[in-house]
Length: 232
Image (tube, rainbow, N blue to C red; front, side, top):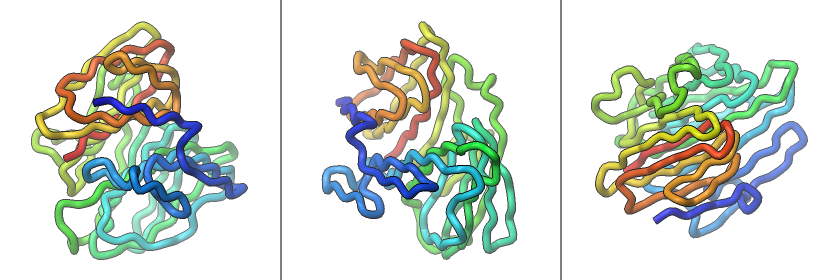
C-alpha cells in the first residue's frame, strides 16, 4: 500500500523566523490518523530564517536526526558538543536520559532541514550526539545509508532504534530500487524534484507512506533528492 500525502495538505505553521510543515501530529497540529508511522514519530520540514533558530530546549528518550537540505545548522548542547552541519550532511542526537540543545541558523541565507524523530528501542540510556559529512556524489543514482540502528550499517551514524535513514540523488530519467524486509514500513519524502514510486507520483515535500510492499522502484521525472526512513 502506498499513500501519497501532498505537501499542501500537511499540518504546519508560520512563525516569522520559521516556516514549518508537519508530516505527523506535532505542536498545535493534531490528526489522529497521523500520529506516527511504525516507530517514526516526527518528520518536520523546516525553513529557518538567517540568524535565527531554536534556542536551547530539552529532549528525552528520542532519536533525533537532522538532515540539512540547504544552508547549515549549528548545534550546541548541555554535554559540551558543538558542530556545524552543512547541506547534504546529517547529525543525530540520542536524547536518552535528557539533553538540552540549540539548533541555530548562523548563516546569511535561509536553512532548510528535515527534522526526524524516531522512538528508541530502550529508554534511559546516556545521551549522545554525532555528525558526519556524506558527499552527495556517493549517493548519486542509488540509496546510501546515513543513519541506522540495524545490523550491517557500520558506515552510518549510529542510532539506538530499529530504523534506517537513507538518501539518494537521481538525475531526470534515472531509476533505483529499495528492498523492504517483511513487516517493515517506509516513509519517503523527495526534498527536491519529482519522482515516481511504484506508479505513484510525488513532488518535492510530499510524503509517501508505504506498507505491505517488498520492493520500491523509484524513478526521477526531474533531478531529485530523496530521503527515506525504514522503520519497524
